[in-house]
Length: 298
Image (cartoon, rainbow, N blue to C red; front, side):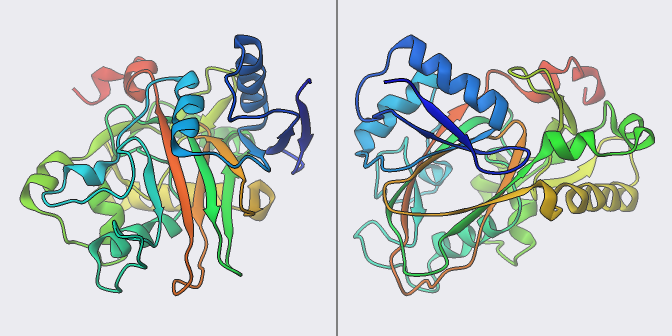
């Protein structure tokens, strides 16, 4: 049965049906999914009740998988396979996390616009998020198309930001919400990493902004100038015309391309269970290496 791809937004995002992701897929089908991702950047696959093993198997078709960064924290007790991020309000005993749980506090940062793993030297390519349990209300994730946002910039601004490199840090983004509970070894491991501000998306050939709440400053610019430029770009990129809102249903699997989108979770009733499982496909190399800009940060 061929894939059916239906646009969900005027400029990006699509629903993909006619496929069972729990079963092994042919190379042709995987290539069709990649083509849909290159075009739409966010693909929603409804009615896909997956186990973690099935999600891992499907995700691995697109590249090597990351492991959750929380596993590096001493005393961390995993609830899921380390290749599956626990995007939920449940602890390792499947109980709703206490209000003072460090994991809950840190995860509140996901409600800021961000790109997965931009705080890593080699950031994320795709993220795949599977809805297992959804509360009665507050079940939204928003996505911003950074290709369209780049296209809409004035030519003068495009020239101004070409070749700029921002430093990204998990410590920076979490500090914005007052979360500073990082151990010394975590602070060392989470040292800022360089990421280009303008990328060329390899699948579509389109230029795109590369932004996140993790972006702290810009190499070679005074800090106030860098901060206001990053603020202005984020404000521009998250205008309603560039944003698609997905309202979750149990069984949804959503894939997004971190190389050309940002996303954010929305508020929900944290007294109700919200359980989503994410697998994350790593990119092929650091963004500065892909852009040939290593000398900018040497």
